[in-house]
Length: 396
Length: 145
Image (cartoon, rainbow over all chains, first blue to last red; front, top):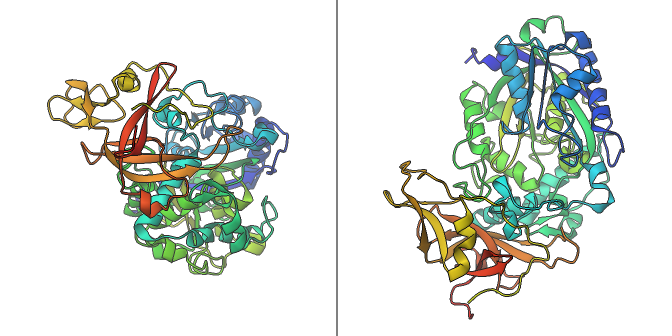
């Protein structure tokens, strides 16, 4: 087990920009703020950085704030010579960029890789709200057999997963609500969270529907912000100023049809394969996980990850989270301890890696979960999935 | 037998794609077609030039019954486009093959129908013609024309 190449690398530094609603700042501005904080956190200077990786690559403006600046633009903005460069969306969800960086370090291509994820969706959407079909002249790619039938939003696609989960397993809206309520409670202790006011079950049950059975409070909140992670070779761990966050195992598998409507088990998602592979690469077990930072672009995604990762059986997620005690910050499996994207804001994947890292280092302040040694991180939903197990300190 | 009223205020058309043109034109004669393997009999959706099971190139559009069973659905309430009324999106498992699924709009069903009364029910396919594209649309099996 100990010859996993991902264990040749670790998270030496983390950083993030200001985040929030409609900051009115550019994607590059936010990215550089996060990157410089992460580099300093790692005890490095920019001249030490010899690799850059990002998700999804491309262009911030053309993607209406979904993407950040392209990796080569950040290279140029920092005037770096690089041994390694990567930017793509077709990997292990957002984690793909981090996992690529770990493998580049393990392969000796680079020593210190700056990985970033930047969103400016809140500013770009402006006061008009989300309209996923805006500017869409024709349905292309995976949308070809969805958008022409009115299935234009990810809310529609995940709603059908939630609907079938409820129908087949008896999962209730009150159970699913616990994802949103737990996130909001945790966000109350996170000064960077967008939504911090307490949320009640009545608030949830009375929230307006978006796409049945998912209501507004099942959907995350778009923000502007950038998160940066420094992936370094383990040789640097003894010199790094902060407690190393080790990458114990990764899950990148994609089993079954990568599709929003053709995946075999429509009560779940591609997470099943990534989770299976993750556990095959470690001696750790679900019971060893101290905090779970699981993607919550929609609440049902988190439920599906809880099941896929084996914290409970497939179909038992509703009962697992019922009442919320088990997944509370003080419960057996603290979940999305920063408030998740549902309440902290949609940093789109990397927020979970940031939170896992500060929890493992013991730097989470008021919301710190005591004695955190192992964190599970998952990104992606539907046909997109990636997972990582992170540990406090190098654990080969 | 065609659907006249579009429940969508704004319908995003499919891209021009030679691989899929037959699918969007299929409803001109009121019939639904999927790519079908002449060698092993497998239906492939979305359409592919080779059979994903046996890799044969002997793939041709084949008429199917258009009948299927609702696997899951959602009532879209959010007005992504101003003025849009709620509508039902459904995934149906088509009769011809257990893993042949189609997403389409479902009409002729009350918007407040209980999930237990809709999942597992039988539907058939009719077509809405807009701008030379024939959009398959689900209706309850046996619904009046």
